[in-house]
Length: 360
Image (cartoon, rainbow, N blue to C red; front, side):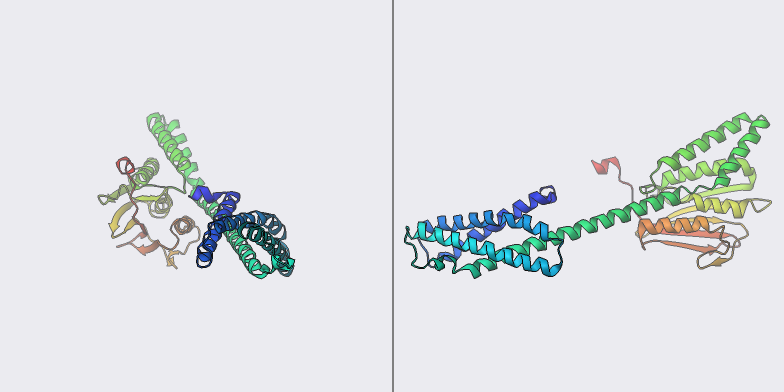
């Protein structure tokens, strides 16, 4: 049905035909009180067909006046509607006298157009419906254009925010690989190159508009952490705690990466003995709770973000991505970890990935 009415020209012909068919039915049923002869049905059908035919040129005339000034357009529409009503009235009366009255013509020719006000009302109603539907179509078209533009802007924004990969990460990783090659740790260097390749492939080929299962996000996080673990060795400790059933929960791709990156920079790299990062996922009613916590020195939190503008870039980007994807149905909260450190909590709606069996 939607495809049937998608084409505006086709939509006009369907509605135009149905409207005049409805006029014929209503007019005939209303005449049964006074007119009983079958010949009157022919007159009604002819009247409706002439009305259907004579209003077609109005469509093309109205298309030309659509962009005129309001008063000029209104006066033109009234004039055209009255002219068409007069012609239609004359033809209708001619059909009535020639077919129903068997050629018994009236004495005064003015009787052929005496019902013009009634016909004018019908034609004016047709004109009102035409402009009303055309205005609605135009409004919907503009609304669709606005939604498309907004979606494209959100898509571009999401991609921009998602692809802001920290260049220091690439520099440090490549520098570590170079060092491993120089000290003949070729196996470790090869593993690091493979993990970096897998991580970059994941980050580039996962559409930021589409959500991924949490298990895929954890896989990317492990790749990232394994690369960093080569750099920090025993100084970096990682713990994952995923509640059963959260593996198939849908999350924005690489939503954890900037949080883990911040934790490594400010909780692990800044301490001689390194630090620990704990990644947790839980279900809470109809929501999914994600948490990235560290045992670093912590930070001063202002308005829900670290006081340091540099450390807050990844968190600001994450919050903007969540806002673009979930509108206001999300939360990103920073709290102090105990006994020390920082916790980043994310709450998003719980959406589960559909299995192939469910699709079938």
